[in-house]
Length: 101
Image 1: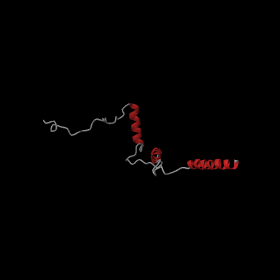
Image 2 (image 1 turned 45 degrees about the vertical axis):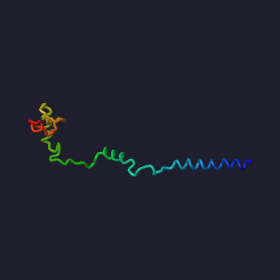
Image 3 (image 1 turned 60 degrees about the vertical axis):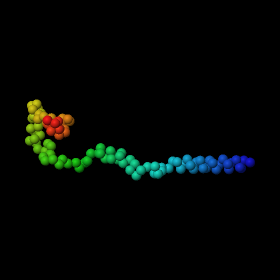
Image 4 (image 1 turned 90 degrees about the horizontal axis):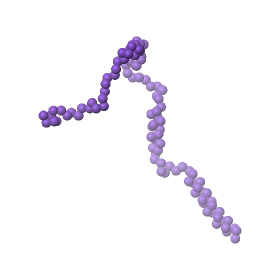
């Protein structure tokens, strides 16, 4: 009698352990090929380029004379202000013709 009980308990136990271990393996069936691509792109965008170069002419601070003049203007309070820009300076092309005048 105990031999049949052991077989009846052992088979479901082995099947249960097998199914549990099978659930631990990673399945790629539900993952797309580009899974994690956004994270890799964000990481690449935050890494500084070690070979970065300034393509403008001349490069900012390239000459001692320019740097000296900029420092002198800063010390004397005569810094050249940047041009004023506004976010609402978009022209829609509405003029006297569009208003009916």
